[in-house]
Length: 434
Image (tube, rainbow, N blue to C red; front, side):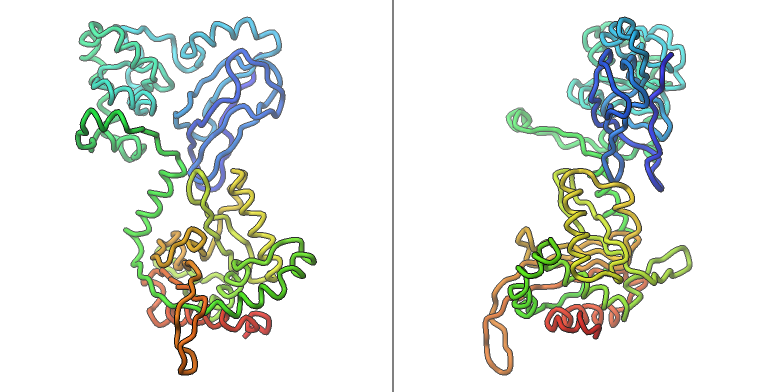
């Protein structure tokens, strides 16, 4: 008896994922709860464990395919299923329960309508573009009629058969071209092809499919620009008081709390104090309503190999600087190791982005919708400034607050940034709650 492997619940508002990679091949033995396949969602990468021990006897979704929650990924048979699984390894397409064996020439498309809901697999689309084939002339053997890489290779090896199947599949394949709303990232390439490049340049290019995380980053940032009335205000802060305090107590702090004293603890604490005074920066728009948050879940932007992620320090308004540093340290490590969960990244009310660690001197951060504010930190640089009528050299940092002008007025935005500046230039305010 076979045990089905299906896409698990992926978290709030996440309904689909992309197959990243299979850790096992058809015919391989698997243990119960052993990671068997990797799924990439809009926010995190998830490893799906094997629901039972046995032998992987079928793979129903190939790397690069998009699958919905509950969709069939494959099947695990008992220990004696190894012999039956071997033929499936040589011909993975028939192993899919939903798809009957496909005829390469395709004279009888049994269910042409199923293919209308699936664009070609990314690897297949790449090969179609490179070879100049018409994707509508290729009958897919994948799930719901999806065109796989093997289908394109088969069409390339049998060019004479292509005209024979052009008439019927062309009608059946018309729908994917008109359904960009369902899969916008995959449908854009044919609609807006690149400008031609010379043969010399083409040989020095590498085409890599965007990960779901990168696609989501691109979509959300553009949505934020299109939706919010975004404006950025700037200020600068003298970091000498914080740096002096940090240098005086960093060894004692680390010895007592087991974590290094960084700047993010001070910045998060300063932001929390400012949010209490200017609640509009901690609000969001919901239809015709303004939702004011009586709590502060601070998102901390972290750069990873796969893209920018924003884990959330929950209830930062109730934490000490030591607790904030511990939380940021834990979340940062999980982000770099690719172990962030959906819960780690949901519910943020305000975001801090530290571009200074990469050397950025000034920037205008983009809102993390539906939040109404994001604070950009930048490089600490010694500059001459006038203090008490004299020019002195001080470690200065530019601060940038991007905010949604639909919620936050200019006066509130400037006041918020001034309060952050005051807290950092006089860190005793953070201790005395001033």
